[in-house]
Length: 317
Image (cartoon, rainbow, N blue to C red; front, side, top):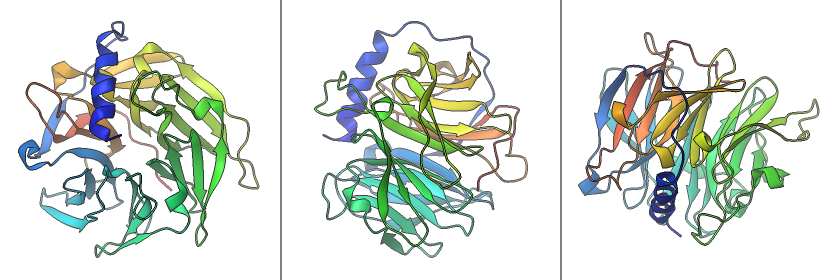
């Protein structure tokens, strides 16, 4: 089942959802516009410590683009793997880019590390991840991967192979989208010795403690709300609030305790935004970068956006 069919199903679900929470719009700026006619469909976004923004373009393009703080755009790597291609992205401290690749083929799927020079290497054991999606790092350099089909979070230790870190019903999808498989764990982030995961079909945020020995503690639901149905990528600010790209509802919301606030929606140019990441460059630390998928809109707008939210992002490991 392709990512396109997943998003069609999510869009249908969104039509039946109730009106969202209180709206507090921030300034939205278009940084880069992509060419939908050429198959340039952005899905993942990540920002390195130098302020460079990386965007994954799913198949048929299957590229990771680099956008510098000055706005210059180049292709970091063409993975040419078929299937859905690269989805979620993350960047480590040295500047290597990691991509979750879902192809439904063990010969090509998994997690790829792309060096600053553009050399791609698949991490050992990651071919067993059914649908590698969101990615996050902890302070020890462990890589955590959301498996949307497997209802699991995988861990790839530095120098090690991928292994299931936690598989739990709170991370599993329900199959209610009717696309042939469940869509559960999706967006993922590390914060204060815990892993935060969005569940697409359950409309929840799940918190998983990281024990001192690195194992997973008991997961719990942080929040469950119709405003989170169809959630995708997430990011956190310095205060611990969670920002969620709700692709099915074309919204970006902030979850702060029990309060949910819409930061931007379709009226601000959000068009099936799938991933978000805080800026790191000068003047960008209080901004979210987001990518519009938007291909199913009557007027597709695949774009990289910058949204002023007024709070700095949580420092990444």
